[in-house]
View 1 (cartoon, rainbow, N blue to C red):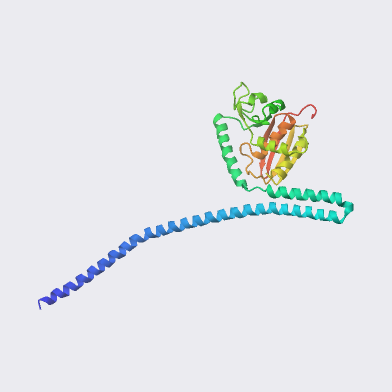
View 2 (cartoon, rainbow, N blue to C red):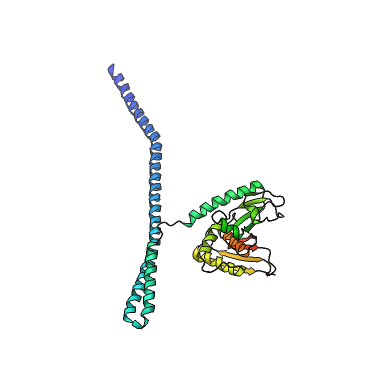
Length: 317
C-alpha cells in the first residue's frame, strides 16, 4: 500500500520530463532552421549568379560568332562571284577581259575579307562607359576651376602638324574662363592651363581629334574647305565608316558662320556631356577645314541637335 502513491506520482514526472525534452528539441530545431534556410538561400543565389555569368559569356560568344560568320559569308560570296566571272570568261571570249578582271577582283576581295575579319568585337556600351568616366572627370575639373560653359575648338597650324604630327592634334578644345574671354591663338594652347591676361582657360585634346585623323586617312579626296563640303564628308564618315549614328542631317549658313546638325540615334547617348565624341569630331573637322575657331552649342537632346558657329570670312560674307 505504501508503494502505490509513490508509483502514481512518479509516472507523471516521467511524462513531464519527456515532454520537456521534446519541447527543447523542437525549440532547438526552430532555432537552427533560420540559419540553414539562410545558408540554403545564399547557396541558391550563388548558383544563380554563376549560371547567369555562364549564360552571359555564352551569349557574347554567340554574338561574336555571328559577326564573324557575317564577315566570312561576305568573303565566300565575293569568292563565288569571282570564280563565276572567271568561268564565264572562258565561255564568252568576247567579254573575257572584263569578266576576268571582275573575277580577279572578287577573289582578291574575298580573300582579304576572310583573313582580315576581326577576332574581337567591342560593344558600344564599353566605349560609352569609358567616355562617361572621362566626361565626368573633365566636368569636375572645369567646375572646380570656375570655367564657363563655352566650348571652342581651335585648329592648329598646318606647318606645326607636319613637324610634330604624332604629338600635336589637329585641334585643341579651349574652355574659356568667362563668356567674355578672348580666344587665344593655337600656339598659346600647348599648355593645359592658359593663364595669359584676358585669355585664361583650359586647353585639352578633343576626343574627336583621333576620330578626325581616322576620317582624313580614309578620304579619297582632299579635305573640304567649305562648310557644305566638310559637313558632307564628316556626316558620311560618322554614319558609314565609324557607325556612330544612324543619320546625320545638317543645314549650313556660311554667311552667318553657322551650321545646325541633327544627329539621330547617337551611339554615345547624352550629347550634353563634356566634349561628346560626335560633336567633337564635327567641330574638329570644321575648325580644321575652315581654319578658324568653332564654338559648339547643344540646343536639343531628342534628337541630338548642335549648332556650330565661327567668324565668317570676307569671302563667305
